[in-house]
Image (tube, rainbow over all chains, first blue to last red; front, side, top):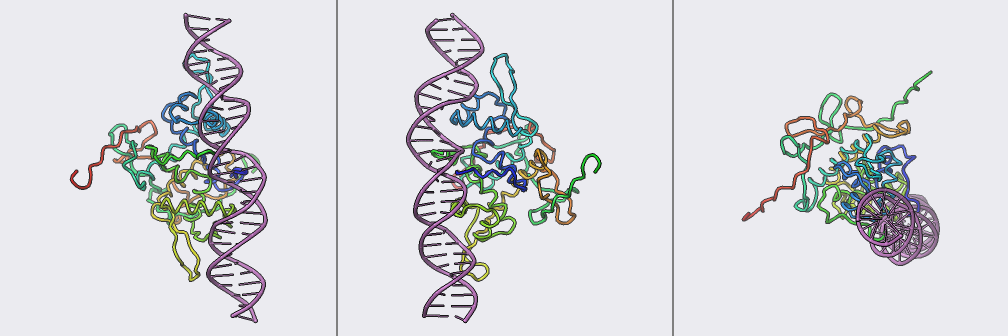
Length: 156
Length: 156
DNA sequence: TTGTGTGGTTGCATCATAAAACCAAATGGC
DNA sequence: GCCATTTGGTTTTATGATGCAACCACACAA
């Protein structure tokens, strides 16, 4: 790409999230991190990606506040990468991606795993969009509104 | 990239969905399509992207069964791109991305729009993950299980 | 101090991307 | 029917991100 088209200044929240998550590896790294991986070598071995790319992605994710480096953990002097709350907040995105594959993939028999409720062992329910009062919403039931101007914290 | 690392054969449903949606523009095109855009020029004007890239992306999305070309619509002999059910099925993904930005963006005041319930004009509720029986689930309440072998349709 | 494994960084070739120019068909004025 | 304009792309060209492999630095062990 000639300039990678950063969406950082874009006013659309979808574009903004893609700016942080929208490349080929970031969400997979986050997926593994949610699964408990922390070490460079773990990510590299599990994802099978080039180390320089992994290095660049980890740095970008740290810059975006999605991962943070933890100095130790098990005594070794190496570094670890752990999810921040912002990073853990991507979980619904991953679930949505997963459910979309499960529902629409042309060859679902190739999908190896299903996400289940740990207690019952049953698949989790499809994500659904609801109104504040709990009514189920379809896309057509929603619309976009300009964000209301937020008053300043002091002297506003 | 040297080969773009297609995740098409990967068994992880997240990787599989990223294979179709995981580039910089696809989800934004889908976002506009959900918003009602259909024509090449509309997408190009709204997204401000290079026409060759748009062309390639539209073709890829059609190949993936996310968009389909409709021959007409308003009499003109041009083509239109409309979402398939699979394409409309990405809506929760977009909502998840949007909500993640709304919740964690460092500069939320730059976000221009909020997604609201059309009837009440109130923001939609955060997506939540629930068990089959309706219990609210956190990431830690879930786990991955191997997909059960599906019996064949005939003589299975 | 030599050896090994972990955690990266540095070349280098390649391919996708992006901007702009170019092109063809459809439309519109007359 | 003829010419200009719009729409919907493709081609051309420069760039730079990607991926592989090699290399390097540090920790730890003997």
